[in-house]
Length: 240
Image (cartoon, rainbow, N blue to C red; front, top):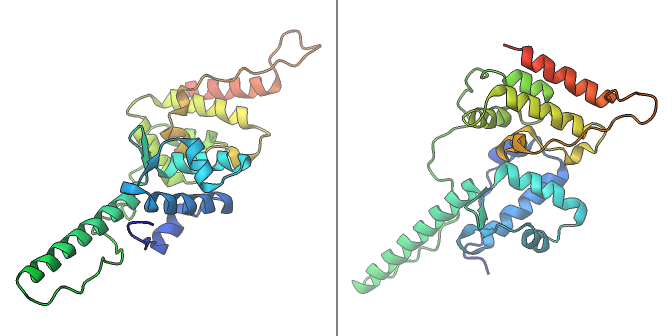
C-alpha cells in the first residue's frame, strides 16, 4: 500500500509540460509518476528492465519510455525520481509528521485528540519559473534548432542548450545535431529524441555512425546523405 494514496495532479502544469508528447509517451509518463509516487521515498531503481517490468511495457514501448525518463526524470545514480513529484511527496510527509506530533501533544495534555488526517496533497509554495520570459537565444541556438530532426519543446530545448553550452561550444552541438539528423533520416520519428532529451543526455559526445558509400559506379564518392551532412557542417563552420 502506498504511504500516501492521493497523487497531486495540477492540470495546467500537466498540459503545458506534456503538450508535445504523443499519446503513448504521455500515458507512459503518467504510469511512471504513479509508480514513483507509490514507491518508498518516492523513488524507483534506476534500472530500465525493472521499470519496464513494473509498467508492463512492451518492447516497442521501451524506447518511448526512455525518451520520457530522459526528459522529465532525475537520477542520483542508483535511484530515479521526478523533481516536482519528490517536492510534493516531501511536503505531504512533513505535514503528516506535524499533524501526528500535534495529535500526540493534545493527547498528552488530556485534551481532545486531534481529528486531523494526513493532508490531501496541495501545491507547495514554490517560485514560478515557467512564467519567466526566456532570455534572447544564445549564440548558435537558432542554427542548432534548424538542424534538429524533431522540432518539439523549443523552450525546453533552449534551457537544455544553455546548460550544455557550459560544457562545450556551439559548433560542436550544431555539427553533432546535424549528424544525428542525418542518421534519423527516413527513420520512425516516434523514436527520434526530442532536442531537450538529446542535449540533457549529452548525445553530442556519441560516436557518429559511419555513412555508407553508394556501391558501384561512384568511384569512391560520398553518398547523397554524406554530401548533405558535409554541406551542413561546412555551413555551420562558416557561421560567425
